[in-house]
Image (cartoon, rainbow, N blue to C red; front, top):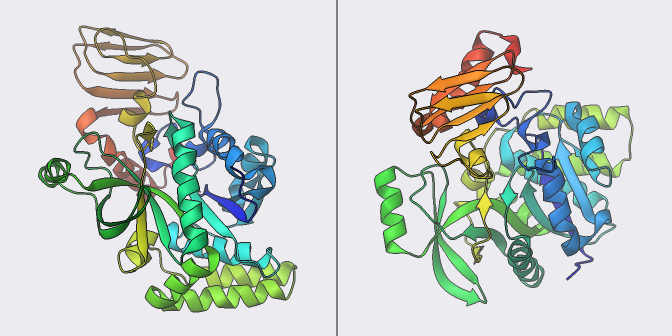
Length: 361
């Protein structure tokens, strides 16, 4: 199944703000473990992709402050430096330019993956990605991996599929942003919709052409970076790249490119137990709850409580009479949030930034 002309680009620059207070600037979510064996999310991401491409094809893109952690967790990876967090469009465009610079005139297929997802059926994941690679190699397509929705989830974007292309690949009729509950229920009822997994496959030249068409200013900057790279390494090189990158707008690849492009296709994958571990609620789904539906980790007890998530790092947490509440204690901070509001934890992070609190670092 190995694909020689394929590079895997793992985006590892995020902070996982909905995972506060465990996820911090110095130790973001992708370096944390959600498994009993202690394997971190980024280690799992790399391990499950290796049968598809092999160790020499793994690239991780992230800001310099995370490079030491990346080397510790996935030493076989080549690191692409991302000067700053500018959302996924700038990250993906820069990775495409780096990939072309090291490919000696070839046009590699890029499998673009977030660093922090959990997957139960890794074989099915690889089957979907492999179909995406074949499509990206044989056509000028922007391929996204679609997940069959299992519930009316309001935390994910949705993809409406159009005409069949071949196998499990369909044209994309439209992308939809995170919906209201009412709308999500309609999508589920109607059928023909997939969750947008944030996993993509395309050739480097094809995604850059899409930047040219839909984000022309960013494209011009990327071409300037390409010229800087051609001049060879050096302190001036990296300083100039930082300078150009700082002018890029912060926009997602979905908003900036995919929602406008006419050559998007979706591989409608078989269910492979995907979880983007985007919240404490989703983190809890990776473990067995007790008979009252409580997930308890660390030194904690729950009395007359149901469907709670309680995690304590180093001191006793006792909960009495709670329902659908998440309590996370990391020693220097405690988060208490209803399970309905776990997506809003990032607001705490925004407020802590505003107050210049140290509990973010």
